[in-house]
Amino acid sequence: MNDEYPVKATHTSVRVLRAVMGARGVGVSELARRLDLSKSAVHKHLQTLTALGLLAREGDDYYLGLGLLKFAVAARERFRVYEVALPAVEQLADVSGCVASLLVYESGRGVVVAQTRGDDALTPPLSEGDAVPLHANAAGKTILAYRPAEEVDRVVAAGLEAVTENTITDGERLRRELGSIRDRRVAFDREESATGWRSVASPVTDSRQRAVAAVSVSGPTDRMSGKTLEEDITGLVVSTAKSVENDLL
Amino acid sequence: MNDEYPVKATHTSVRVLRAVMGARGVGVSELARRLDLSKSAVHKHLQTLTALGLLAREGDDYYLGLGLLKFAVAARERFRVYEVALPAVEQLADVSGCVASLLVYESGRGVVVAQTRGDDALTPPLSEGDAVPLHANAAGKTILAYRPAEEVDRVVAAGLEAVTENTITDGERLRRELGSIRDRRVAFDREESATGWRSVASPVTDSRQRAVAAVSVSGPTDRMSGKTLEEDITGLVVSTAKSVENDLL
DNA sequence: GCTGCCGTTCTCTATGAGTGAACATACCTC
DNA sequence: GAGGTATGTTCACTCATAGAGAACGGCAGC
Image (cartoon, rainbow over all chains, first blue to last red; front, side, top):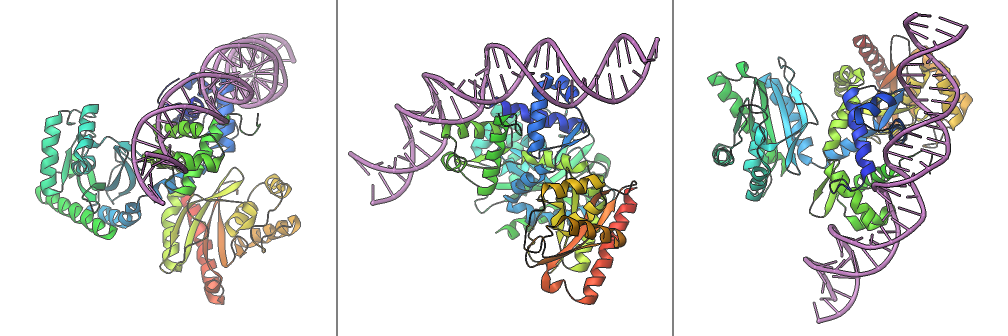
């Protein structure tokens, strides 16, 4: 038995969900092929997941079901920072014209729980619901900077995987950068999470000075480089995060 | 074996998820009691679901995990009407000051995929992610009015469950009302889905004149009764739905 | 220091998750 | 039309496993 997934059938069901998500409209045989399972097994899972509302069937094709929405909304509601930060993030996108996001910390990783595109924003590399490693982007680094030391140790020990060629992979270099982030309450990401993309981020901390989330603005490298622009956006991001923090108390 | 849920373990896992959602922060023993399962079984499910990112653990308490968000976002993305209608629904809430919602049709039921509160809106009985029967509310009725006849037959045959004392439970009366809804492209809900609440709704149909969603405005009975107010809001709802429909083509 | 609760980890067994083959049906191609 | 090859569904089968139950160690409160 796999120690990580003691209930194997649940693992299989989630694999089915993921495959359906990746395919958007797919039938039994195709799924069985992709997952290397028997048609009958896949069929049982599809039937179960559909009855539970997690999948929807149209003809002979399956799609993710809207029953998933209730769960996700409940998961998000737990983080009061979401409600508080949402209007601030929207405003940030309006003013900057770029992509503004809210990254929430959960179980050692960051999850994009809100994202708004400004007027002239391209499609960003990440979107709502995506999970990212904390060491490989601006928002994650600000969160890591305001987390207990053991957490940083754990992240470093787990190995700093390179997402792009600019990703910080050296533990000591990361620790140094986290220190300077603590000085200014800002982190930058120069194509460390996606080639051609830069971002600026600032943390949202709780009463014990531990980060619960981070606000960020991202854009293509050519639009995120001018001195004043960069400094203006930086100021905006920091003040937005700070005001969210105040509203949170 | 239960025919509805051929994969029993998946059913159990979803029961665990639902119980965690209802409790927001709960441990192994408490869950085992609520679900009438052994502690060891619950423990296995919790471990599996946590490893899969569907749950998050904090100390000895479990919460719904943000990994659910990715699935929900993908489920919602399938309905292009969501993206198109979102700004229109927000505007509707602004202008009316009440609660504006978008109900999407899926597998014989309606799901609230977007909802915005106007300035002086109370907490509505439904919120994002909730699923509702089509016969017991304004938005559902407009959808049902623009669905194939067999679908109405199925709904009626399944039995029109009473949600409040005003819910339509008679098949013939429902069919008559669906007819008049088709005349004006509007439906009303006079405390049929929640006591003290009224709504106005209008359908969003596709090129074959089949409803894919409905736009609605809801408010407490005392605020949803004045003649002009009611007629103004009705006009707004109808024109909003119609404009969403045009944008959808 | 005892009692009671907690989460975790055993062992154990009946159940059911998954396989593979057979089936009905639909859609092409020849 | 007949034959071929897809599809989804339904069998019977069997070994793995989901779930039960007991025992463990840790923690908190009388």
